[in-house]
Image 1: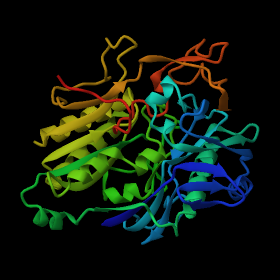
Image 2: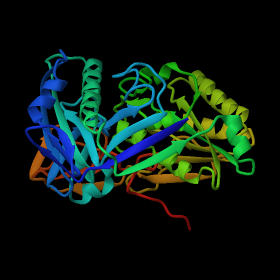
Image 3: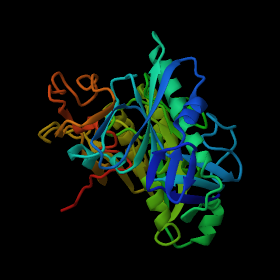
Image 4: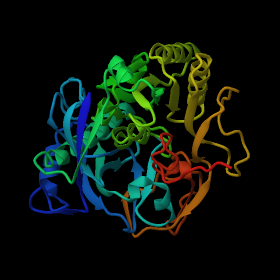
Length: 428
């Protein structure tokens, strides 16, 4: 499967009388965009604001972050199964507006929502302080249940990204990058001397607002399966969860999965990147056993020589992570896990809730319990009234002067477990 990704570099976003992309600037007619997004009976009002890198702006509580994209050639459309028909994506040509993000905010849905600071110390922990953010603040109708609230705002964010992305369809990209994964037997013939490497992509699916969708299907309903990496890059997986802000995978991160991109960089040179096995994170032990058994079976069936596993979330999913690692290693396949840590504010506690001697190759993306003081900002998009109750906050987190003391788990993307972060680790 071959995907051409046309990257259109955006250097600024401005409100204007017409929505268009011109000379590196995204112009938005605010009223027309609001009209295009309106119509959901669950949403009482929609407001659109802009937040640029370096501005003294705080966005909270953040729900999802999405990159505007449009399908230019090939089967399917953006976000299949949600906004487009259920066609298999991942081939043809797609255009993306780079350096731009749609951010959904507004009244809190679940307590695990985040903060994006566009400047200051908090900005150093989130990749979305460097994007030009089109913030959709959605006010739900009174009495709306959490699940309907989450679904309405999720769809609103995707529609906003689709709307903006559509104006990139006829724009000449600044760069076109080609990603290609051959059929399994073809790739083995093409790269006979290269080790076959696969990526096990764990998706948050514990329910209770901890959900991820694959072609529109709640991934808790699936058994582990194989996907072309380009399907994921083309919008087949979207976020629908309120897991802790620091290590959730917003839809933007699914579209720009850094492990997939890094593996593609080495494909055909150092490794044969065979593809992606997606698997879910379950609540009950029997479900964890089933999914980890299937995952290990698929790795063996594909004849992999090495595996990278990433997880989403912490605590209960640590068991899924370790089960996957242990069983794949027992198949004789060397495995590396990518995670983050909840090691206490002093860093002295056990980092993961589960462990195994076979999990001996680990990449960590930071300790989510590390604390930080975020200074007051001149402007808040959304509301800070929920800061004391979001994950990473505590009674008294919001100070009278507008500054906030929180654990970095409250910052969107601070310790993202696929490495889409500004933190790093170093071996000694």
